[in-house]
Image (cartoon, rainbow, N blue to C red; front, side):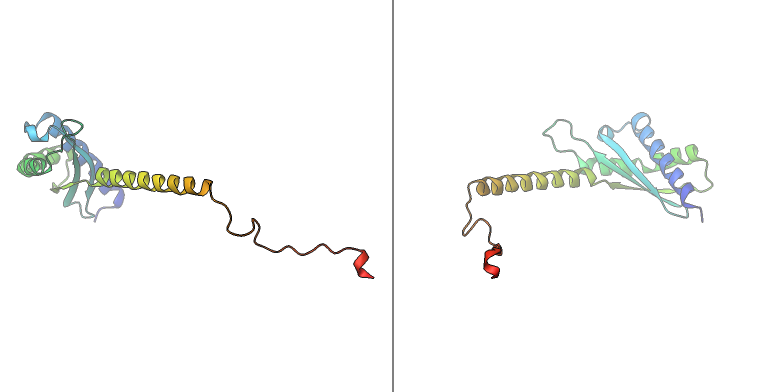
Length: 151
């Protein structure tokens, strides 16, 4: 078993090698908009999971996730060879590609926060013209005792 620090270093190196290979070595047009976001390596250094995102061509175009996944599966052998050459470890880890959902989750959270802010603003607007149903101070204050009443 390798230590966790070595696994992190190897994962970082694998993500750098794969990102560089996608940019310079692999000539598949479906991988032009793929970005490697992270990599994780198991404790025994035999399996590596590479996380990626796919960017859209234009602002309103949907990215081609299925095409990118198919292209990465097809290029897996070449990428593993390049990882083996670039890392110099005894056993080259097998590569598994997983689509990174963090950007989509962040977008959903931003939408939810915007809806919560709008609801808070609506409640604040309704509360600005509100009046108390009873007295402004619902708690009864004790009557001040006069020194004259003590007799």
